Length: 445
Ligand SMILES: *Cc1c(COP(=O)(O)O)cnc(C)c1O
Image 1 (cartoon, rainbow, N blue to C red):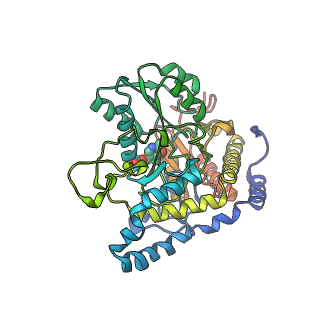
Image 2 (cartoon, helix red, strand yellow):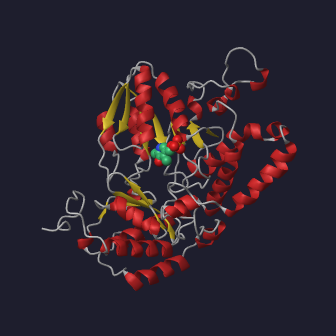
Image 3 (tube, rainbow, N blue to C red):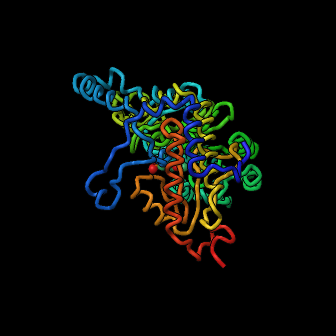
């Protein structure tokens, strides 16, 4: 899988190769399992120039596309279940959805045996609950180890917990184009480390951390390990049980296609469930919620992670999305993900140096998730221009465009078309001369 720099993949060559890759893609049939991409957004978006028909959707790592089946099953939930079962829906089935949908997520994409995963809250809230439970379970230790390039919400939540509990944060400096490495973690943990928190796939670079090795290092220091799997779940194989991970959280609206604001998942290894106590004591996590008695007594097992009423409307699309991923199989998804990111990198590598575009993601596919970040100083404006032409990646500070390649819904033809349009946009714009990120020689004399 080495980079094929110099291979002629531009223009018609790239187009033919995309067609061949799509024709040979065993997951090609899944593209039609998603609703077609709309022609135009609402009027407000049109005014902003964002109403162009979508040519290529390259942001499934931020918000996955809706599976067709969601529309039908939502309709059914609303009319047949909510509409006719009414309050009885809770006792019929909804009450246990946090655990049953949790087990579906755990078994399909997390490598987790039943009884260790729930679906509830947002990732931010779930992260707070599990991280706060973890530090309380290591009372003699005063440090949380994290990295400078973790997703903002992760950093803020941990800053808040550190302040609340008078703990110290030990920051590992990560290269924004790469990510957290085992040797950096080994140098940061010690007898005072209570908890170690990293993202498995870095939101900016797409770096895929060696979760098994890093978890072992955290454990050797006596610390608990919490992984954020937002960019992993549904795109790369995850083996929480086999890696002996303690805690994990993640989104369901990215590669699991659960829809905007879909609830998060949380994983607590069975061996820790009696020891850890999450801090938001609500009636739905109590031993018998309908006893409504005085005092909080946590439910047995993973149910104790639940706080309030489960978001049933938000969970149904999660079910559908995870079932789709399970049907395709995570190994096949990973293989296509690697091929998609490799194809994108090959095309960009074939661009002339004068375009000044730098690949800010790992070149080794074994260390790369399912998105590729490109850099150039004017990419904020370039991203706007792409959106106006129906090519939808996203911009990430300070100068990155992320090309998110969601294996079930993205075609190779889409990647080729998007990058051909991006190249046109770039060729129409002079390279900014103040770019510290542009390749040497690309910024002029
Ligand atoms: C997307 C993402 C989140 C989002 O958290 P929300 O509570 O859903 O807003 C958190 N962490 C990481 C690493 C993410 O990529």
